[in-house]
Image (cartoon, rainbow, N blue to C red; front, side, top):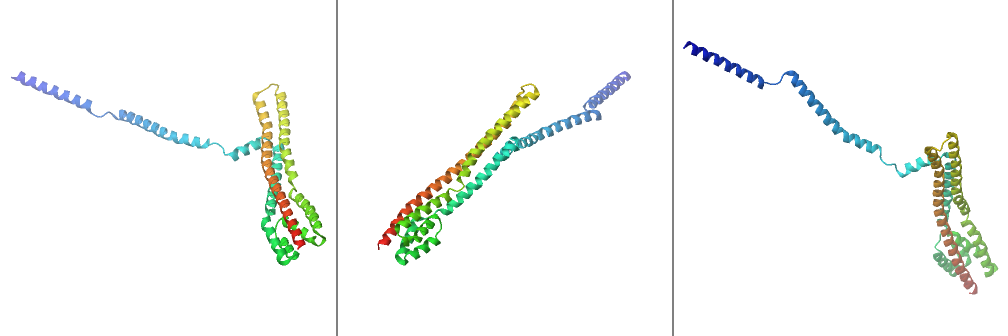
Length: 277
């Protein structure tokens, strides 16, 4: 009996010890293991943060690499061409545009409704005579009214003198309309010539760089030729711009001259008819 109780006691003690071992294995990890887990978790979080920041960095780089505008590219190329020839080409553009704008304004102000003016003069001749017609021409704007006024000033000398006066003063007015146009044509021819001159000088400088380097380096040749060709490009651009203005001005002058000639014929017929009354 005593042996049985001793065996049961020993079995109970072994069961309790085995239960403690199982509980010890199921217990939380020690602080060192927890620190390692925490460190791994922190590194994973940092990687996620870095990956989250990467798109913003890419977006910032994309913003920094946006393409230049047309004006910025034009300014950059102008500076690369050098101030010697590019400055002169720019000066031709400024002077040509200044003369073109002045001519366009002058020709626009010289435009007159000749049909309305002829009707007003005819009514004035029938209602108040030559003096009334002179007042109408004096107060009207444009070269056509000035031509008519010069013709009326010679009315007392006969219709032939009126016609001669109109033809003579018409030639003077035509010369005024064409004033300054020759300068525009000069700048049109001068701008590409300056560009070609800059190209030749740039090519000479490129060959000088090759001779100084003692070797035909693609970089040296490319830089020299690029600078040389930029002057030609800008010279041609200036010539094209001024050519457009020149053709527009010439067309307006032709329209004004044709209008002057047609209205002068009608005016002479009107004066002739009035003189016979």
